Image (cartoon, rainbow, N blue to C red; front, side):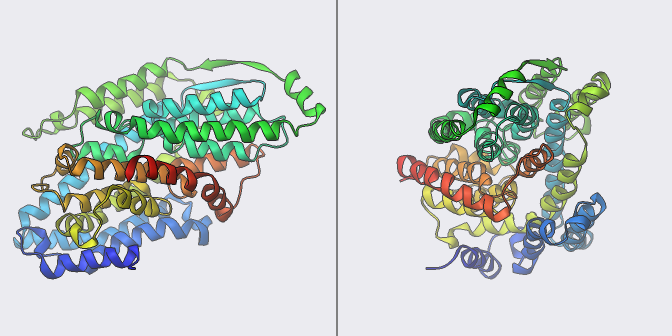
Length: 464
């Protein structure tokens, strides 16, 4: 049976050899996909083998720039010489527009949620911990998985700081709040926002995914409650007494930032650009509004609140540095896969779910979503415009494939620390708070035991 990498290779080389249509497919071949592969492998490998060098922002921008340079040079040559100049120019400008929108959304949610401080130390009973996870899972759809993770992880860790048996708590938090929870809106998780930018209606994910989202959420919350109850019963009397003595009611500082978060949602819903109007101020009204709301949060929120939250701009700057490289280098891959996705032989929703999820587990789930959606578009008629995923979402045959791709990207980003951005941030915060977190492969082991059976149940119930 062919492996997933060999199937990808087949599809891409088929596009180079047999593309007969107009546009860039005639000018692209397999080597132009290598910068995209190199970019994703750099993100996966360099943090483990060159951690101190990699954590410098200049190093991350350097990696993005080096992998982007061949694509920018080739497309620039086509524009300068008139070889498919219009298509090349459109592809580059569309990638830039998506990048700006992507960073504006993530940046505004990150900055605004960093101005909300949730203080307190509740009694660390299983019911309380389960409630933390349930609330975080729901609000991840309103403020993003990053925003929900940053808002709730510290209060949850403080609540359980008096207990001994707590290693499982941040892991389930990553599973639910940092990943699976954000599957219902484009604001929830980066892959879905890229889908929205490419034409998927805002409420499409809520309409088509809520019942599939609800099943793994309920399964994992019930499992967490059982596991946490078992560990809680192992706590000795001294730790339980200490937990009782240190109780402190929850209190919120910077709560007015919630209004700004709803302002971001309103901007996404109400200020989407008109495809026929290319005036800068009109097209970027949504992004300008989101960044203005983030600026208002920075201006009006006290520095003490952000300091108590441990807020820094490092995580969002890392996203900005890496995704400029991802958006540029994935242009050839998405063009070829969209034109020749049928060569992969993926036809059923369950195949797309597991194929998308397998790569999302160890590569960033946002470009993985775009890549497999482009493959699905290769099997849908007239799926060729800049808003091609809207066509896929509206197609009776394409919609089930997009549902499977969306779930695979969002759900299985939880399978490793590098599957989704908030995973690493939660790990770092937990270790700073004195929690012993599993190694990279230790975490993968936990995910395999807890998540893979859950995803198998989802497959059997909804995708076969």
